[in-house]
Image (cartoon, rainbow, N blue to C red; front, side, top):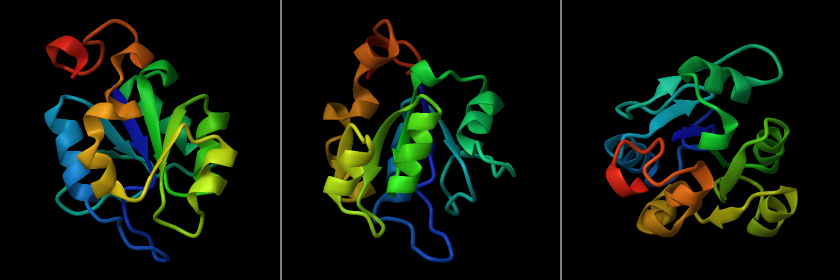
Length: 147
């Protein structure tokens, strides 16, 4: 599985959400490929792509040879949820910016979590851990049983 995210790092206008580096480390420990569509947080295991143009989500998938059918986009804003939808990616969102849960859901996020730490606490019950969304059991996780 590939996790593509812009929400898990800080930018000039927002800080990294609580627990972001821990969430990225856990995803990597599970054998998932993590691609950040911007500069990643220090010390977090991830590939990073910052591609000029309008579709960094597709560029991120191309970087690792991943497909939208085996990826989840972790968004931190309505704009990012909409970008994930344009790229055909399943999307969950973190309330780490200006947009609230209702706006994130209305934009198309399948799940909304308060921050990365909250997502990490329920990781095994989240969209990130649902093998049926990504094909056969164990597909793309690097572990038997998909988990």
